[in-house]
Image: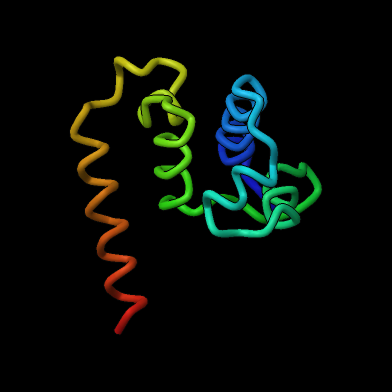
Length: 98
């Protein structure tokens, strides 16, 4: 199952999606997943969760600072975190291609 922290992140992203009137279908298509998979991610009863790459893409789609997704106190997270996450995503993508 999801940890409490993972569910908090998912809930925050769901609320942002809803505030911007983005449907699950729209967001799922933007992420390259099915609406059903997005529904499973947002469900409390399912163990599905976002990948780091999906969270990064959602922050861009929702026009919401990445550090604000991970913290209630965004000033406590350095701006360098975004660059680190980009590098981790690049590493994961490169690893999957080989």
